[in-house]
Amino acid sequence: MINTIKNLDFEEIQEWAVAKSLKPFVGRQIFEWIFQKGVHSTAEMHNVPKSVKEIIDAEGPLLLLDLETHEISDDDSSEKFLFKCKDAYAIETVLLRSGNHYTLCVSSEIGCAMGCTFCKTGEMGLKRKLQAGEIVEQVLLARRISDKKINNIVFMGMGEPFNNYDEVVKAATIMNHAKGLNIGARHITISTSGVVPYIREFAHLPFQFKLAISLNSANDTKRSELMPINRRYPLEDLLSAAKYYTIVTNKLIFFEYVLLKGVNDTAKDAHELIEKLSSIPSKLNIIPYNEIDDRFKRPGEKDIQRFLSHLENVSFAVTLRYSGGRGIRAACGQLYHEVMDS
Ligand code: SAH
Ligand code: SF4
Image (cartoon, rainbow, N blue to C red):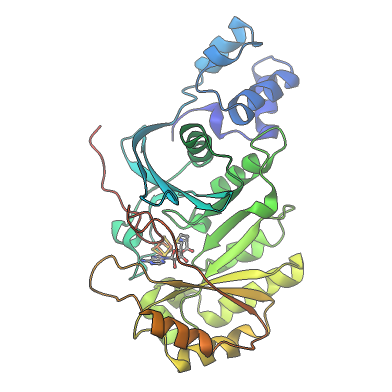
């Protein structure tokens, strides 16, 4: 755990200030410097007295990530940042453009423990969880480096957000805070592979964050093969938690479905989806698989359209999403990085 006040939320930094015999408003000021203005050091905090700067500096660094590489795709639709953490692990963050809108896909962990068989990040195993400050800093740095106004955040980079629930929720809260990054809660989406207890807990958060669930199959046998977490929390538990979430929050839930050629793209798969999802206020997002090795194949355009044709006139909305950034290996499921030399 890196010691830094960058892991403190708006309330905690005021408590920290009081504990240091400072006024709570000084804590609020520091929070604004760090998260609203995105400063990298106390030297940039113009209205903070030197004595206070020394107290802040004694708490550890304010810059937790170093930019290692920054790649921009040929068509300018995506940018990938490789950031090195203080312990020399690396994480990837991806900026995706759609018209004038920019969405940042942030990582929540270094690697991932869930071991989904189609996902490159899953191959890494879990190295460690990210701290809230490291998660938020991905946004601050991507914003500064790209000079783009980032209006949407998706927790769909490396890691399982609900395996690092407290830090992820804290990071989302700081991103949303009016004195922080001021990104609307409805523009922040957290995606989980299906950690059921946290789906239920998430339903009771007093924020309008969106929830996405990576479904990938509506058949237990198949889903367990693709996503080992399904053995722990099978579809019945997962979908009842999803329904619970929609009832408590009165919001839709987003299901993600990575389409794998010959694996989950048949008429039967579509019918199982209809049967399971019809009673849940939801949207289904079909993502054609991005190939990472030869274990799974991306379906062709015809296969994709055929699968979609089975999902016409259903009670939930169905969308097709081509994840950007394939050319620079920045698309869904392609994020992967070995430990870097320090
Ligand atoms: N761990 C979380 C969030 C990160 S993964 C989760 O699983 O929900 C983000 C999305 O990328 C998930 O929906 C996952 O199913 C999808 N994905 C993983 N590998 C992929 C690949 N190779 N091609 C397309 N989508 C992929
Ligand atoms: Fe982890 Fe999500 Fe990849 Fe599964 S799909 S291994 S949960 S990052």
